[in-house]
Amino acid sequence: DRIGQAAGRPAPRVVEADIRDRTAIHDLMERSQFDAVMHFAGLKSVSDSVSRPAEYFDVNVGGLVTVIQAMKSNGVRKLVFSSSATVYDLGAGQGAIREDAPFGPNNPYGQSKLMAEQVLQAQEAAAPDWSVGILRYFNPAGAHPSGLIGECPADPPDNLLPYIAQVAAGQRQYLGIFGDDWDTPDGTGVRDYVHITDLARGHLASLDALERDGHGHVVNLGTGRGLSVQDVRRAYEHACGREIPFRILPRRPGDVASCYCDTQRARDVLGFEARQDVDAICASSWKWVRHLYPEVSPS
Ligand code: UD1
Image 1 (cartoon, rainbow, N blue to C red):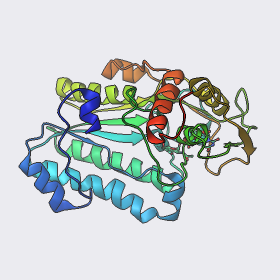
Image 2 (cartoon, rainbow, N blue to C red):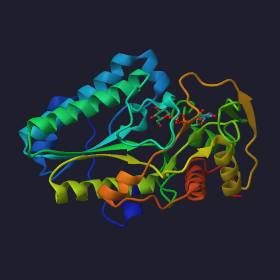
Image 3 (cartoon, rainbow, N blue to C red):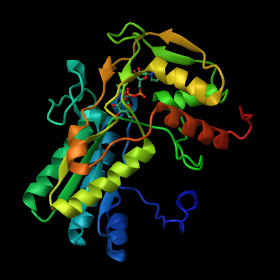
């Protein structure tokens, strides 16, 4: 309903099913005439993937195979896929990461995403009428600017933005910063935070490119700019008008100093450039958080 409200259109039809349920996914595609599929359904926590790797391969790889098979039997040939910067060898400590940088995921989540990419590329190679857009997200963040749609993690969030948002809303006392001795300008980790509305535009551009080019692409989606944990924390303080207290904690296992993308291919292939900055990310997140926790007084 909120998607409809935010878009000013009738709400989209929703069918709830497990991505691994072959019958359900097949029936859905048989009943509806799809031109293309955008496949987002996946698991994404690094720590969770270390404790239950089989589920990550089952959902992220097995689920994708189910989608491909349902597409094959129903004549759908275009797919846009959510991949991740996690497929790269991030420990290499290079500057802006290009799409041809070496792979090297160091956890089951990243390995499942790389494997999913390989499944898609094999499918494309086997069937020349297929075209697949593989989008490697950097750090998706923020909420819909209407404040109607955002993320609501059930468990303590792993990711920075939802964690800061809960501190701002008074749900947590302070932000724990995982290390201030990284080789970065202020010692805290640097990432490429991309607004989810930019990410959404990237998906539409990917679909357009598949239709126009008749073949697939592999593209980074980010801003090309790296921001530190402290940069983001201060931007959120500005957006919500409150202090975000923090404590420096030990480094988190598996973290890297810096990760941001080279945006050249996204510009060349998709005509894509991120438009929103960290202030827009924090403002939209704060608007959503006030919707989520109505008891939080407006600042
Ligand atoms: C993480 C995953 C990445 C996955 C992405 C999904 C790791 C190593 N990487 O990315 O594979 O695709 O989530 O969204 O887990 N930070 C804090 N305190 C917090 C939370 C985060 O200081 O409470 C810091 C982290 O150390 C990092 C930055 O904030 O420097 C961003 O962290 P996060 O949002 O978890 O994203 P990534 O680690 O980049």
